[in-house]
Image (tube, rainbow, N blue to C red; front, side, top):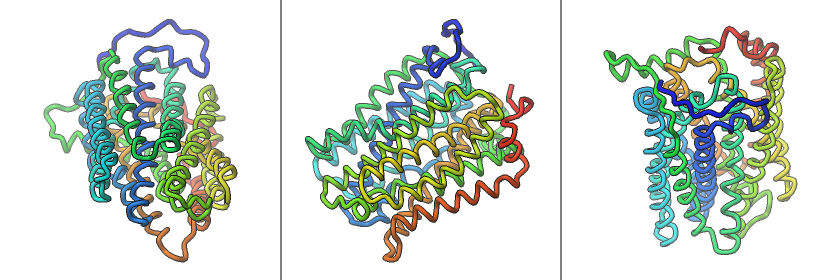
Length: 430
């Protein structure tokens, strides 16, 4: 790993202390643009396919298609992120997604987009993002000093989770005053801005690969690192279950808006999920801001457990909301809890991972998490098409299941140690 010295002098830590490093600032801005574009697209694409087909299952399949390619592409992207310059790989991913978003926007605006085209482009979008996200995560620790790593991860997660608000919020006036079709061009514009920021990054970063070994050996080395490190393995399994039961809600939002919130018009079908995603994003911002200055290991560990329990409780509250204000409040609480939990999880994973295999470890982590979210979005979409299923029943059931998972997780020694003491100093990677 080659690192350029582009950092400014240290000062007293604060909420935004990691943003004082120019390359990290560029990465955060690029991340915010890309994630805002992605979440806006998830909302718009879901509402569009529901309008075209009237099927919750189709919404689930399209949402899954944007997330599930990670099962195939993400492990390979970890190899790429450890073999090549991560900033250049990231720039290529941004450029490809810019082209994808422009193509989709023109298809929608021309009125020729079909559910099968949307499905195919969602797969393409997900495949490119499966390269982009682990590369971003592998590059991040090289742009700030080690003592700023948790703050940098918290800021990155704040932007990532807060983009659930930013992207949909930018589309809302376009939908309201012009119509939903032109809103698709907003995602392309955000990717263009993000690409320009990635090109500003000067710190070169790459991992270490055994050049005498093949791709399969190096790929397995990263996965083996997780599965043979008990702390990492338990953190990843818990994050996977968290994403499956508390964060796979995108496919539920169109049906929830129509049946629970009474938004029956075509415009309302787009506006309802947008309002809900904005609320989730707003809560995510608050949750991550609160974490930015949390430094005590013991407090972090206890907070990890508390936020896990609230991650299960909050979807239950959302399920019984019957109007937009109460639904947005419940969604905001859900966003704060789930974002806080995932930020702490990401920070712990980054802290204990060796930089030599970081690209492969982060890609494997993303692969598992995105696979869980994608798969359960499809499952939830299919379940919502059954006559006996309702949004309150689905959200309450999944939330309750994860609360029990958190209670039972106390029995696992590595997780119980985290809840009581945080990440032990000897577990930190060097």
